[in-house]
Length: 281
Image 1 (cartoon, rainbow, N blue to C red):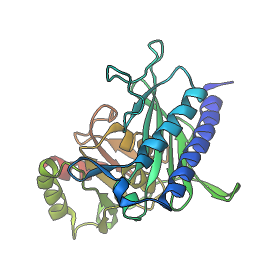
Image 2 (cartoon, rainbow, N blue to C red):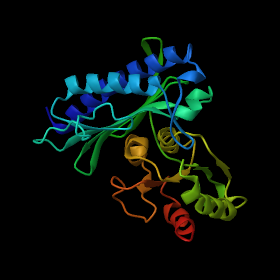
Image 3 (cartoon, one colour):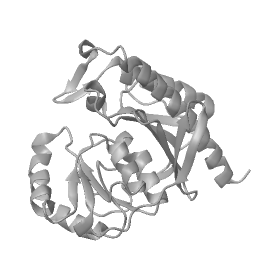
């Protein structure tokens, strides 16, 4: 079996794992209480649902690809010395956000999602993002294109290829997120809104990095930018954007966005224009 077929098969298997985690999250939301919420730090929340989803995903992925290690948001894969479980003979790593958009989830505000990526070194090999509220599964593998699958019960209602938009910056619908590190980012977001508001089509904030990226891939958004976020927030979605024909960099414009904490994703038409605005902040 060639690498493309292996990645395609793996992406399908990971999609099913993401859907199972999403079903768990959906079920728990029906009985969820605000008393279950913990504060990690200012305005950054977690609950037993995040942790339960992560354990489910990690357990399933260990069976699927035993040689791979993990980078996870909630740290359920940590061993006693605080390090991640990693097989020394492999540079394959799963990067997992078990519930991206926890604040949205707490407030019953869509969207929120499960995000899973597989990296080989600095290369993102596959990405899966399952949006729970609309039952949409976005996925891509390196060199294989990007797709969204919507199911009706157990049956696939439709599966569509994703393609970014062709809008220019003046007509663009942009997503500018508000990360938890408000002190560090407040001057930047003020500059971005001051520079872009009234000079682009419009600006939105959706509360989920993974979904903002998927919406860029699907042409629902034309661009997205955020800083002070974790690898688990954007790794899967970034590949989905790239495979849908878009462009992804960090805030400095570097193509290797995988090791930093910032991401700029657009349809490629106005990537440099948006970077110019960001870099003057």
